[in-house]
Length: 627
Image 1 (tube, one colour):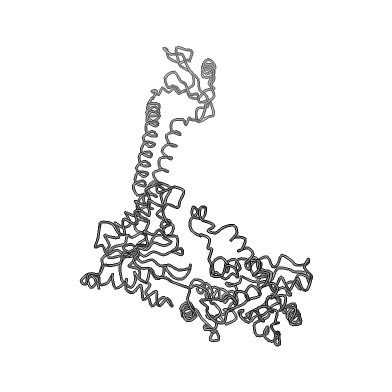
Image 2 (image 1 turned 30 degrees about the vertical axis):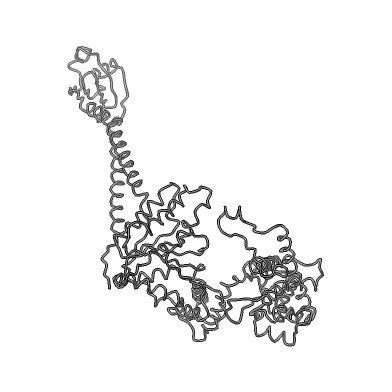
């Protein structure tokens, strides 16, 4: 086993240092403000103002004994009147002679005090006022220099990679922690072996693969599998999103790619994981910026780093995407992403294992049937299943339950699958009856047609954006669908609208079937264009490009106007046929429609078992059969 010593920076330490510097700057700023305030106060503070009186009046009162004390400071005189302890008046004598020469009697009952005039306060005030602008200008210059230095440092780090480094966490993700995805894990185990024992492969002349591309729908565990590869191999793991490479400035993304691979080579052997690589890996030449835009330069740098002149670097790039069809061909060639691992939606057995993993640390009641829940969740991803278990725990806590009961699990599953119930919405009796007929129409058509799925639940309680729901669940996972199955699905989609039409008349149908009609049109068009299931255009495919904008602008339609008219006719024929079959089924089983309508108005929700009892004896009319 290869041991690698690598050190991850302690973000807490750097954060502490930064906070201390910030604290120091704040204290210095406050001190500067206080110093400035002190200087201003010292410069402009004045003693308590004294009343100014005429010098002749002061001499007259002093000679008469009404003045207690005269304090001389040069030519300035502070006067303290009789019955007072401090000066209350001020005056000024003429310069060049004494106060006695200007009229004060020498035997007058007044105390005369001579104090030398001091200019030190004025001198210091003048010095401080002179230095104050210099200090302020100096501080501003220092601040500007530091700001410029910080911007320079930030500019230098602008092209640095933002990848996060993992590898020495206590709770590492291993393959045993991931339920399902058996085949995908087998493909990735070879990558782990490459990283742990590279010499074994080099001795026989085998080259370590440069990249592994994980392709699959959202929520299937692509990122988790990449973390498990790093955990199993015990090597550093650099994680980054494809969008983090791209900035508004051209060349920054390429610089970040170079910096990322440089760090990875220093920590080799290691793994670089690029999530959502289609953000930078889309086909070149399809954007409006030609080959000079930022995204394409970033892609070019990735191509060079993955298969450039430097060889022998034990750095494997794992990338994940939901759109493998839009990636540039240069990324997918041998020598770049040598391997592609397709991670599909889990089957029933895998769903059961995933549910057990997520319920493992939750107090689950014994009456919960995980196998039955796995059967119901066909088409769900691992993220969907995790959401169901979490919603079940939330509902149990909301109801103050110590355990997660079977009813709570069912409620959580239905909430995730078809939306939460909106019991607060008030419907009139007529709307309630119309909704009951609509949902009963879906149910009877879906139940009677032989290749339709099973009815799981019928409710007229609004859920999500729907006024009512008729829920069909397939009895088993299916990978393929026949024309007959699709036609039965079209029939049950139109069952609600046809039921309204039969009961209330053609001109009384409502907008409640808007979503049903939209989905039916999409399915019919998909049958004709993408699956070759038309009548006149059987086995011919006219797929519309779903790639980049420029491709859609130039290659949106790959067939003529005449063919487009035939496609429209084929779609119309499928919809018309489905409507006629639904009408035939409802007219032949109108009594069962009324029964289910009455039960729905009474109970609002009918489960699968009760639906089967209500529909006992219903049949398919000959006009609705396809064979």
